[in-house]
Image (cartoon, rainbow, N blue to C red):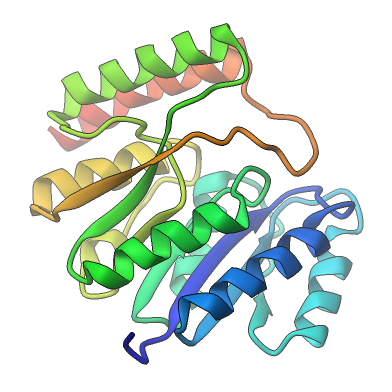
Length: 228
């Protein structure tokens, strides 16, 4: 194992009831990975006590830091967290869906292959409509951006800091994951996908619906037009 610092960015939105348990669960496998680490919590546009809970976690655990965002958006929170991260190995993931075992597995792959982007490829969706919607979106992105990988939105995503173009992503919304894959493709960053079969959710409800899915389909086309 190397002694480099691992930074894990966790966007958090209205998760006061379970983010404490999530962070405590994550700290154990991070210790087992055998590298120095930090967790950056990014509460964004929260309407509950999430910011207070996050600050209490930072006071309790020296390896936890908080980066506040008054504005919402998955992409914005990811970008803020990556901007403040100090690690040589950078990771961001969905704090509601990622299990400690999944995080440890992806980080171990990234430790073994230090010059590769490592990301999750989630194989199971909890409802047939989400499976079809995800399949259509991934086919769209593979076609538009000439991608070889599947599960564009799959997290955790881990990459070394010297893949610097990934530190200059621009999207503030859910399209940041498509942009991430597009940058990897155009910069020639090699990528490994780790199959993940869990669909556990810590709490809360998914914000994905027909309207948000349509915005993502149209957003992918808009991103392609901007970057072609």
